Image (cartoon, rainbow, N blue to C red; front, side, top):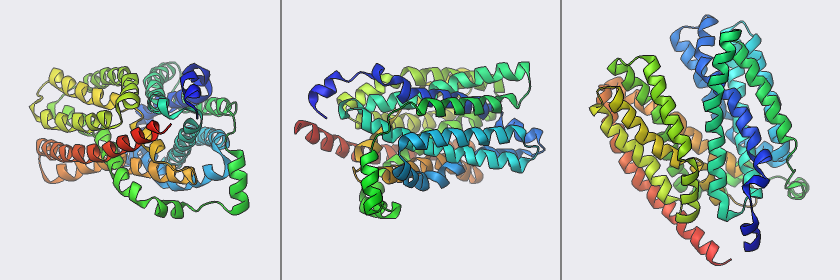
Length: 404
């Protein structure tokens, strides 16, 4: 794309088709997340089973990453987004109608599968329509659109539950998924010629693409695993420490709400920094903020100090909105891009799942304060690794832009 085209690019020209589906879909998911465990309990699940049902969203995402990349390569981003929205709506409606824990688990697992397909297709579309000079801001807004939905969804869900019952939020989620599918249907269908050529010559196999780019996935991909792990820790370590201090659930919720607002506030500055100063200046603070917060957490003894630690995490996490998708777009090849993005998504999902598992493993054999310190030290080492590989991305990007 030419420099003049880059200069003429305006986000407002693409905002509805680019971000509309993500926002409305996230509203539905955001409304469901806080009450999913409660729904499982209402159906007769014990505490551990309810927690397992909640975790099935992540399991579905992990299982579907590679197949979703292959599917997008064959049907294109628009059809994938439309299909993901409709199937997700069916999954949420099934979760509302079922009277068994097993049925709810199936619905949650299927929803996780659809969400991964949705994310990969949306990322691929953004790579096509946004010039490289604006890529990080575009991905930051994409990540931020999910955050906005997750902020709004629980508020709408709470009102619906007050007026009706718990299942109403699942119907809200189904309606939002249908609306997301309808919005996605209005976007242009890009890459049809490339898909037609691939059908004639044979689509690249997922494992062939992974093998061809194994070095990138093993190096920069491992940095993405660390990024995902760092960002997921706030959802496991902070609530555990708040419970350890005896803070009320309402107080913990308020702390998370304030952190979410900070998260959104730092979204655009993070994208601007990545586009103008490089990926490393954002990627390192994401990991470093979590590492320092983990080291400080044992010193937090009341709600105010816990809130300050959470604010530190939120600033780093907000700056890093879209960082994984941006790095994936930078590294993705022209041929076999959807398959590559599926593997990239898998790296991020491994990190998101790994954070709570690391906390649980250390906490099983040591006090929670020790777990905080161990995770913090690992985070410091991880920040150095992330910095090294993202700096290499910046150098390659500067060379590419200088040749234009």
